[in-house]
Amino acid sequence: MNNSSISSASEYRPKDFSDMIGQDAIVKTLLNAIKNDHIPQALLFCGPRGVGKTSCARILAKKINDLEENFEYNIFELDAASNNSVEDIRNITDQIRIPPQIGKYKVYIIDEVHMLSNAAFNAFLKSLEEPPKHVVFILATTEKNKIIPTILSRCQIYDFKKVDISSITKLLASICKDKKIKFDENSLSLISEKSDGSIRDALSMFDRLVSFTDSNLTITDVTLNLNVLDYETYFDLSSLIKNKDIPGILTNYNDIFSRGFDDVNFLSGLSRHLREILISKIGSSDKISDLKNELSIKYLEHSNDFLDEDLILMIQIINDSLINYQKINDKRIHIELCLMRLASIDSIKKKNP
Image (cartoon, rainbow, N blue to C red; front, side, top):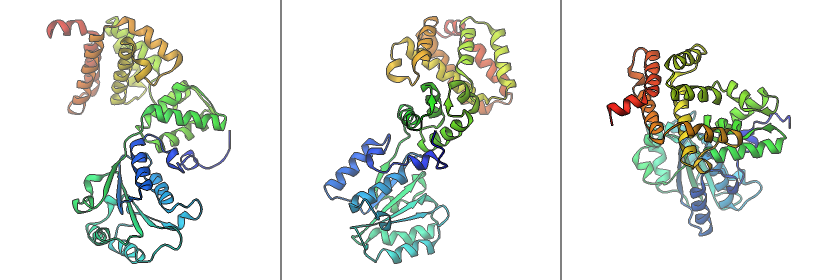
């Protein structure tokens, strides 16, 4: 493995629109705007953290100036989380009057723009209403709802989305091959799933796990390090549910509870497990599942033990339990009751046909 101390998030930060992952519609729109020379003077990039908003802003700044080198002289970045005063905005107001020394545009990227004070927003509004033709503002935020309407109305808004598990997994696999890291695809899928659509979070977890596993990512080690239950635990539990073995289910859950696993994560994992069984049973796992190889085969074999309608009802029962979880005082009994209801699915169907 390359022993560089640079984090993967920095090393593999997108440098061109072709490197952007999971934001195809936004990339296409921006490329068309550049092609037709219709560059908005104010853009708002909003969406979850770690999905490429700031990277996209830097790439756009480079593209509209048609510069491969020294384009950073045309970019001015402000982190509004720590520079949110009127004085910080006035510094920008003073700078924008001066045309760029090279290239066509001066690009001002204001990250976490929702953190600006009300006075700073009002001071910024004048610059946003009548910017010089050589200035482009790119505002980035994770909380669009906190930005005042007068700012929103003057921006072309781009909504970035969470990146899907499959796309993140492909990126991680590519990095593993590039750095000669051993891996199995299911371990990468688990990292992607835990990242909740954030490429930056996925790469941060990936770096930690590469170190933990000494560059050999296996599903066992990744599961252990991320403190999530392994697939075998869920297979054992669903078998007990199918066999209506309530003592076995309660013993199984007692072991999980004793190991300190979070109840909500446990139930969410069980719901996802039953979903995998369901999509394997209906023959769609190759299209909408992120699991590979032996694990997908095992899910397919396991699906023969269940009826479609039972799996759907089980997932619904778990979701209802998750919704009510915070309202319940005795959390353990609440989880145990949910698991016993799963094992009593036939009785529930007779009672509520």
